Image (cartoon, rainbow, N blue to C red; front, side, top):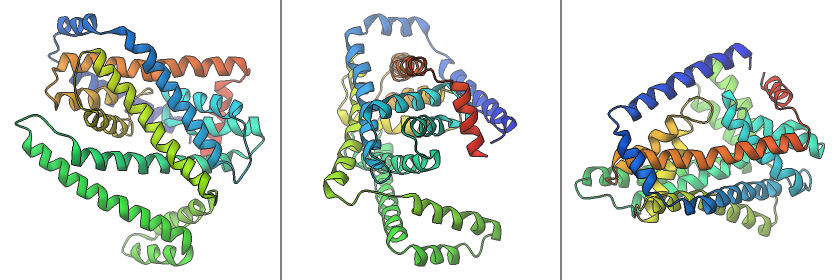
Length: 339
């Protein structure tokens, strides 16, 4: 990816972030925001930050098991690489963090960066399926306040759609792995109405993608992958629930699950590094659906963003300093591999 492309994406992301920030801070009573912060119980912050790092550690454990078909890697390398990668996602444009993460571990463990990156694609698949399952559960179980019946019905319909998408994707991946050539042939037939360039890109991409998926065949290791996937997201939802409690907001855990799903979708929207604006908007409007005042919702969003992003940035720079690694060199090498 060229520097000009990254600059354009960065400018577009900053523009989107500014739009969301203007939308959020428009007609805000800042006295009420300060009042919410004064009423907050700050003792919750320590367990929130602790659970955030537990989540990253669990991600490193899952990554270890995804890497087993390639090499038995050390947690002493996996955890710092994970932290550095997420730190890079927070401060670098174009979501370079995944490539930084693969590069750092590849250098430490002497593994090809491309092979490491293939495991991160599978890592994201586990995240995607777990989030879809959380979304499915919340759509059918979350209870919105009175007067939101239409939204509640919409959520249930969304649950059915999500279930359908979940089953279709799982079936497709199963067939792609077990009947690779036949499935790719069917995809090619389905793509015939589209321009030839589409199939020329999609077919090779599917082939390289499925060849890069290498999972352990041991049931115990598959169970660990599944367990860590759910544990990762449990330790993402729990801090949000604790922050709500710190502001004396009493909502069921399903509400925290729904807001977390909103946050996941928010970080997919192009934005400035750190997902400024989009992240906050998802949290604010998610809470407002439960009749939480906008000023209090914004206070929660600011704390959520701060506790989830700044500690990992500090830890990431610590690991870079400790291991005498240049972030500039890593991002340049990562960017070259994306070309």
